[in-house]
Amino acid sequence: MKIEIDYDALKESVKSLIVEDDWIISNMSNVSSFIFGEVNDLNWAGFYIMRTGRLELGPFIGQPACVRIPLGNGVCGTAAALKSTMLVPDVHEFPGHIACDENSQSEIVVPIKYMGQVVAVLDIDSPMRNRFGEKEQLFFEYVAKEIERVWDKEINK
Ligand code: SME
Image (tube, rainbow, N blue to C red; front, side, top):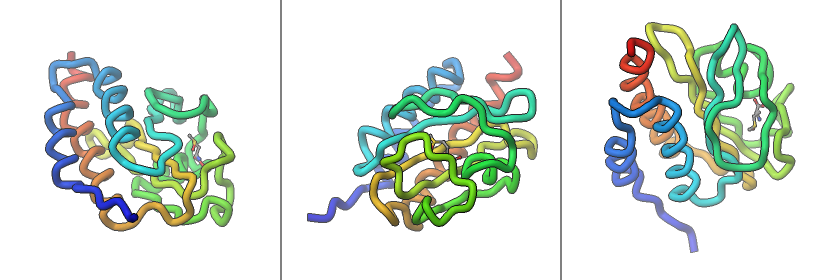
């Protein structure tokens, strides 16, 4: 039976889970765990954070992953370089895809921006080909916007 996810309900939960006064790493950790628990058929959910001009591994749920991704490399580095969501139905067809978990078949990466600059990316992997469609894209872009909402507070602490 196909599971229908109520993304509107998940959005409400994400909104209350991300608390402006909490540390950004705590917010990212809880969001990773929430996504992994609520969205079916995922094998990795988490963040890479921009540090000294490249992406570095942030809070996540899943198998241990590569720690550094240069801008423009892999799906994550491409999303960060292009400042736009990358929806990859089949990772084997994405030139330069970085296989951290060889179970991954499809992937979506959404950049998180602060003052026009990419400060992190949200990365979600699935062991199913074609797992992510428009509904998922809109949901993960909402999650990214919610992290953006508290980023300002974080860096001005
Ligand atoms: N597949 C990503 C690397 C990160 S792992 O999926 C967790 C990429 O190609 O950038």
